[in-house]
Amino acid sequence: MANTTTNKTSLSSYFHSLSQTPQRLKKRMLATWTPDQELNQVRQRSGADMKRSLKWYDLVALGLGGMLGVGVFVTTGSVAHHQSGPSVFISYIIAGLSALLSSLCYTEFAVQVPVAGGAFSYLRVTFGEFVGYFAGANILMEYVLSNAAVSRSFTEYLSFAFGENDPDVWRVKLHGLPKDYNMLDLPAVSLILLLTLCLCYSTKESSMLNLIMTVFHVIFFGFIIVSGYCTGSVKNLVSPKGLAPFGVRGVVNGAAKVYFSYIGYDSASTLAEEIKDPSKNLPIGIIGSVLITTVLYCLMSLSLCMMAPYNKISDKSSFAFAFAKIGGMWESNLVGAGASLGIVASLLVAMLGQARYLCVIGRARLVPSWLAKVHPSTATPLNATIFLGVCTACIAVFTDLDIIMELINIGTLVVFYLVANAVIYRRYVISSHTPPFYTLLFLFLFSVSAVGFSLSWKFNKLWWGLPLFGGVMITMTAFYHHQVPQNHAQHPRTTDWCVPFMPWPPALSIFLNVFLITTLKLLSFQRFAMWACFITLFYLLYGVHSTYQAEEIQIAANQVNSTSTNAQTNKVEVQVL
Image (cartoon, rainbow, N blue to C red; front, side, top):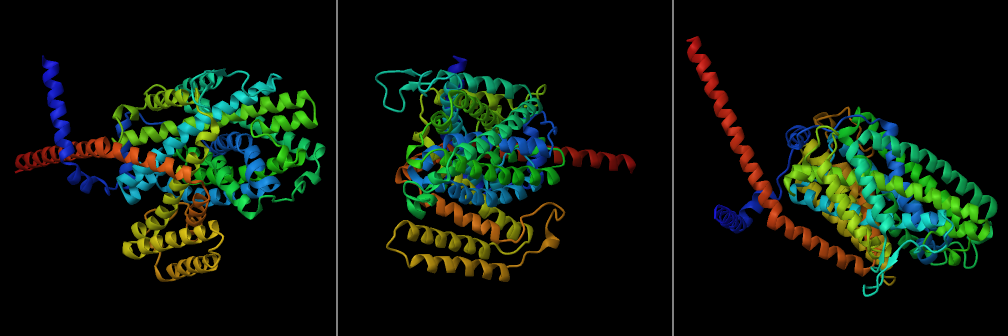
């Protein structure tokens, strides 16, 4: 009877909260936190602190491990065959440039706000709670889906390591389920659960395991590159239809798809709470890993296209298939084993990052607070790690990589677009104390011009839009740079690393992200719109009310502490008198 009464009271209280949604949205949607609050007050909600045990080489290794295994083994074959042809290496250069510019923006934020929340924390301190939540939810979606899909590629390459030419040999086919959902992948699930247990134990030990795997992985990359150049032929780069058989558009469309390969550096930025001397080690770790990865991607993709004509490259397990054709089975087996190892390393880093994202979102009370708890013994976000590991394993059972590739890309590009905007706004408005109107107007007009340029490119008939919108963007950026002051003297932490040549790098990042988004298919936008509606509905039904109540409790606690302090002060004064 008591439980029934309690449930009725809770339900009544919830409906009352829903009736207050407009007022609470007005108060919470644009609410921001200062970096000091993120570093101290908000972080304390996790209980125990995460240990600062990582150095710059750990971060470089984590960035390399997170990016290398995902991109070159999962996307290169498909993009070379269907989008870019032998010029897939140019697609990697374009995507790498965009990732490098985004990494500059991430690095400035990571140095100034060294907490585990990544883009969520950066956008929350700049544009408010909802924008931060929207970015964090998209990054979480990208992590879970990509980890599930990549773990299935592990099964494909592992089959080659054991001499099996059928990538589905270890999967169980269930009749009655739709195509692309009917191949159950138990090895992928086992790998996800095993890595989840490893990450629950310790970040430092997980980092050491990744460091060892990454060293062997880079050596293995060298073997593939040298073997491909020695056994392949330059003729395959221009045969049968030239270097770019699908034209410049094919190269650019391929860049949007291979961008999936660069999301690992975002995982590295989420480890900011566990890095020693963040202002020094974070820039080296994040930017260094992106540069090294881009060089290796280009060399690896060239090696693949030299070993086989682009129209004969396999969509799945492309490197293993290529070596099986030009070499012997032992080389194919070795490639399968090395690729499997690389995929394990990338999953380790990505799962490390996704748990820290969810932990910080839990600190903000946008999801249940038990997900924010850091275990006092292991100093890891245990609940978040287990929860996301189980979610990833459930999706990995049946979901095919091609189903979710472009959904992952559009979510990632939207978040990186928001972070680039946030760097400009924070530097010129928050740090320099200039009126926000001019910066917001510049960001809006620049984004509109970027969309105009991108659509002109996508639809061939609008050729006049390319010089028009391109010229407008350059002129607008130069005018903004000249007219809007950037007061370094008022910058709160002027000794920290900052993006150079402002506002040009983040402006170029905005343009490239918008451009790559518009090259994706309509189905990507439809799926993204459905996901955006779902997370917005969750925010309206849960997030805004949870954060509002947490804020009210915090205000009440502060008032009690203030009253207690004043009473003690008055008592001391009376005693003195």
